Image 1 (cartoon, rainbow, N blue to C red):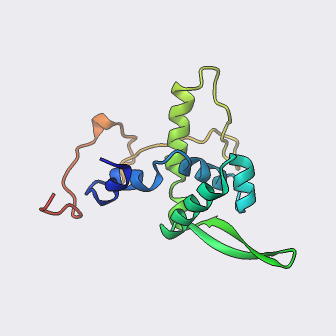
Image 2 (cartoon, rainbow, N blue to C red):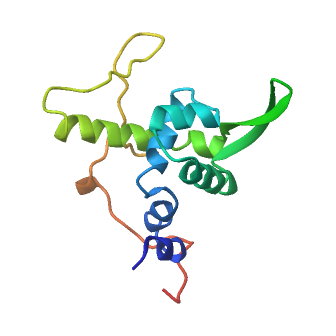
Length: 153
């Protein structure tokens, strides 16, 4: 199955993977979360070809993850790419990947530390029950059919 075929799967993991799962998109989002907004900034910090970067940004704008906003630069109109609310909701996913990478792929310790701006504590990603607040692992969860699953699947 090709990655693009995943977008039609009735699966809440397959569909995001179809959109976000190529080798550059998550890195592009990481840069956006650090304040990068302009095309030339993305290109300089990522070393990505103009064509690939333009394609990824267009996909993310079409998906509603980025909003393209015009600005003037030396009498010419250029564009910034700002995360939408939908894009901002990807932050915990990137931080979960970071946590996993720090634990299993960084033997000398984390490359960067993420701290709470107000108190200085370490930023952590928690998966919790919406009713009782308990932290959850895969062993604590039961999977049930949801309203979005159709009989044809």
